[in-house]
Length: 487
Image (cartoon, rainbow, N blue to C red; front, side):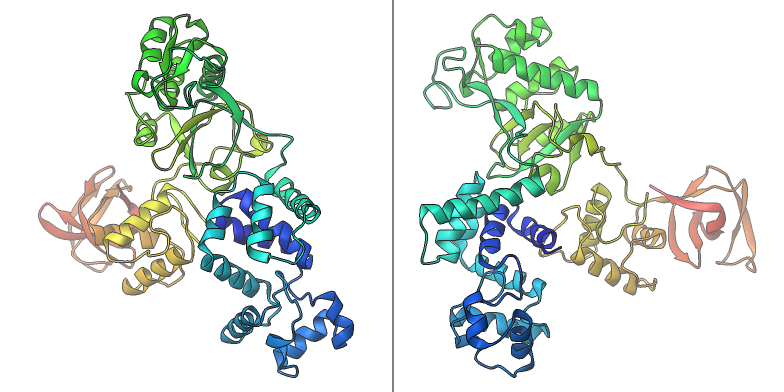
């Protein structure tokens, strides 16, 4: 359906569900999300249906498209320069002017050209805010009354509810936020307003979230419980300069924030550290700048990647830790998202554990991307982002081509072995009981010795499923039937 395709395209670009919902609600108001929609008032005037108009423009039978003043397509492009862009891109790409993907490309090009609008959508904090931005700054129809704003925001909210899960199931988060004077430091110890350390609805931070989930569900529950206790305890307040006092006061109490009776202070990252300590994960001191690396180094957490975790609340679970991608803020999730029960923690793979193809994501993909960059392959658009997209597929094909492998774009075991050879990584481990080592790749070559199960050797070339190994200072070959590459 068009709705899903449009949402998928926009969430990958705008990366804020509020902004995407605002765009989609306005597009629905303009065209019903029909990329072939001819403005209704012009159908009778021109004697064309949507399909007839589209075909006539595509074929060249109708050549007044750019200047006829009729709205057309998803955004009801009307002005001559906008319709000229649409027509030119259609002809350059050999597509119909009514092609959905083409129109999404045109829409994105226009949003990119309006940096203020795009930035506002990427940082919008509500559906209504985003919807109003699109209406008044992008679409700019003659009627921008409150009634129109409400109507379009209603459409936008419908898409937010459909793809994110609705506002009635708002996920709660807890954190140390700000002192009683709205400052980062200088206030009195303890929570003077009830809001210094408190709960709120989940929101998409302007710097973006990274999400970390405890591998042990019991640990996650304790982290959430201690955060809830901290948010309910008036003796725990916010002060950046006194951020360590909660840790010191709570340590003799087993880091149980419900038992703190001495007025003290913390900040967002110091509070998360205390909650982890209560759960038995005693981390070294950290701030939001290095929180992610400290959490991962503990080995107790898995990073949850992808838009469904980082850009919406639906798949979040109680006890998840969120920290901004750059210095900023950190919170703990206190209630499950609407789809948390249907989610499972993804399996963590190392490079070589599985074949990789377009659409895969994970740390093994990131490792592949980094390794290819070491060999000179470029990732100018996305870098080593852990997502196997078109850029990664193209580089894998290029690597396979240079190594004389089948050019499939799938990073399979043969490709992995070739990469290890190029990088000088890994060893060959003997898996057979007693394996002949030969002078060349094939059973017709002379035997120079025997390798035994479990032994490992430095290796170089890979030819026809035979490995060249350093066998006691001499170059030898063993069959891939009885050996494998290990890291």
